[in-house]
Amino acid sequence: MKEVNITELERMFQEKIDQDIKIEPKDWMPDDYRETLIRQISQHAHSEIVGMLPEGNWITRAPNLRRKAVLLAKVQDEAGHGLYLYSAAETLGADREDTIDDLHSGKAKYSSIFNYPTLTWADMGAIGWLVDGAAIMNQVPICRCSYGPYARAMVRVCKEESFHQRQGFEIMMTLAKGSPEQKAMAQDALNRFWWPALMMFGPSDGESKHTAQSMKWKIKRSTNDELRQQFVDVTVPQAEMIGLTLPDADLSFNEATGHYEYGEINWAEFWEVVKGNGPCNKDRIDTRRKAKEEGQWVREAATAFAQKRAARKSA
Ligand code: 3HC
Image (cartoon, rainbow, N blue to C red):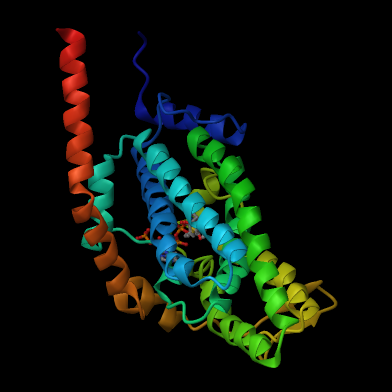
């Protein structure tokens, strides 16, 4: 077979990307492309799994059976998204155990938003409306990502996220139209989750170390600031519709650009939370470590059963 040098391989690879030809697991790809996908997909999966914790906190305290059933369904969906994404990372050669150990050791990141506490039932509404709303804004473009398995996983995930966002907004709408105490609870949740939701899109484009290359490889189809702006433009009218006020005195609509202009994000807070110093970082990781320890017997039993069945088959 004709020797093809790396430069030629990279040229041919970028040509496929530029022609929107999907890259599949068995295709040649630059090591850096593989590494950044493993980084992003595994951290995306960690976000889904850790994201179950703040909401799981309210399943037993939902105000009625309908709300409990909807929240239970949503949290179960997040587990499925996480497992889907861990599988997508495995198609790139990531080892599942190592990936999960990286989360537990603090080596891997997950979305900063999940390090904030959920103090009232209204937080379930704010998370569904804002966090899943932001996740949809960020995940829809990934359905057109250059890496096949990631793009295909996102198609299914985004369908479920739409239900998550709708049920969250319905909780907020119900509370906002309820008693003065209920409206105040919804406003308090919005006040606490608005800015951390904007931080979900990552640092500003000028500070993002991955965006330029991820755009070239079509892992990202829009930049962090572009998606953040889209989210603000869609969400501000929704808050106004239900009579809630966004906690940003600098928020204003620019008729000339057709976009909302918003205040300065507290990047010092963002990086502190990303570094592990948020209100709930330690609690979240301790809970995930404990879940792994307590689930060890299940994995051992499943392995023993599989080995016994394999032995019977080969006998
Ligand atoms: N929380 C924690 N870390 C963050 C972050 C956040 N909100 N935003 C950025 N970072 C980290 C990045 O991981 C990167 O660190 P690393 O090199 O150690 O991985 C660093 O900050 C620089 O940021 P960049 O913008 O340069 O990094 P990316 O190009 O990876 O962009 C991203 C960050 C936009 C989050 C991108 O990784 C992405 O789109 N990921 C896929 C979507 C995702 O993970 N969403 C998280 C929420 S999932 C969710 O909400 C589930 C829903 O069902 C509730």
